[in-house]
Length: 424
Length: 160
Image 1 (cartoon, each protein chain N blue to C red):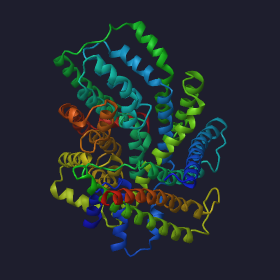
Image 2: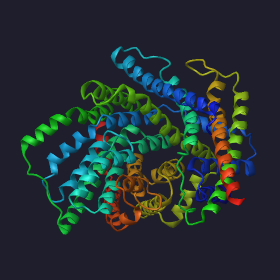
Image 3: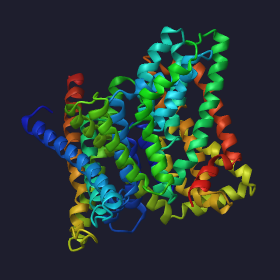
Image 4: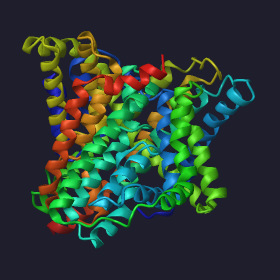
């Protein structure tokens, strides 16, 4: 066990890619301790990604890329501006709302950060927002892309724990919006203190015009969620339909997408998928060892030896995940740690969908905490600023998200209401 | 890194990835059309994209190796002097190379075992599915060896 975990962390610290680090530690363990044929390595690594739900990953990446390459982000931002631009610190609000809407189209936090940030951050800088402040807010708001359905993190979580991806999607809706509102409240307080301006006056006409312009792109989430709620599509099929819709929208309706862009888009989809699925593949092997060593049972015993209280244990688990999130990559945590914790929490009577969404929100926070905060790093890159500049501002936003996480942890209905009402 | 052969191989790899990526999206979309619009589900439309995804993933992992795009955490090394970083990188790349070699070996074992197994829907030999990992790993090794050679050249230049 020490060899497995120790060699993994050593490999990561030496700069070896996460996927190879997971694989190397697992192979080392098998070579040293497991009297099995080495065939198990390739077998587990292949079976680990042989799954229909995982197909949703390339398909949602495709839908998101097609949408952002067709420049629909500008339409979404104009709509958000007509909606909330009037308020003090309007641009910050516009950015959060745009991130939430784009999050309902794309399934990844980094995609959300890049798509919205590249248009919003320059505008915010012109209005006098400090670079570090807007980058911090962007990272946090963009990470909601994984909480608001569709979500690559939820696909992986559903596959590895055997939870319904459709229910996770529906369960993520209220927590995602709620966390977004918390971020907006905090940025409003900042804006008042710093004397940041409000936008143009609100008019119904402007709202209607921008809504009409954005309408067809806003239909994408309706198709995805509607299809899943009505039981027409699985998550994978919804992703395929969303991609086809995005393709038609970009090529024939908005005409902002060129046929010549398509090979590049498909190649980027393939490469990103390869990077994610190679991690999943190696983690499947790692998970096989954990299962063979009965780690989930031992972990459960360890937690139960600390306390039998449901709430104490939930706090402990959240703290553990937050700490892991600061220096580990989300996908690796989801595949290695979450299946270990799942039997423990369901044994305590927790709804797997509630747990899954709670973990997703927790991971969104981890994506913004340095040193390993992929969304914050992406936001700093988009905003041409550094982690050092963002440092004074990131902690208040992370705290706001943690408050949201705590509320989501203790009020299960926030998560379970929609999936239990609309899906059986 | 710039030899003609490698360039052609990379182009072939990229074209294959584009085709796989298009096929996967196309087949899953067809499945929806056949099931809901034509009310006539295809018997192979669930198995085929799964196997294509396995091939695409491991081949794309090789493309990502070429781009050095696999996610890693460089943070712990940045305080070290640049020469030390290069030596560590040489060492870790050799470790990764050994890991990939084990994947190739393990992959050939699985291909042997599954030579006579066939998939349920399409009756594809399972060995053809399990071949994806060793093939991808060999390509990753190829790009990695080129990167290692490059690093050794730089290290050698520094020392002399």
